[in-house]
Length: 104
Image (cartoon, rainbow, N blue to C red):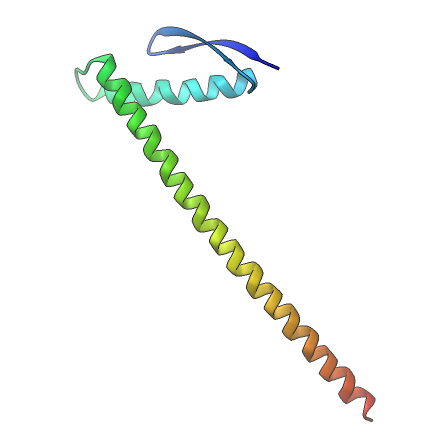
């Protein structure tokens, strides 16, 4: 289902249509608006230049987020492998204990 919402970015209204809900689209627009606002607060800069710089900042956040997510996936994989190895070791030790207890 398509959702339609009007948002304001840099005092300009934009109508967005997407499958995401209105709250999400408003959150995204607010993020973009804040980025443009931060850049324009730094001095006199055209809206076009501010939009390009904001897009660069958002792209930077995206790529850094992707790198962080990949690092977490790698860490999770390593921890799962270590966990499996430890479970196997524990199973072997439990078998040894069982054998020793039954020798008596």
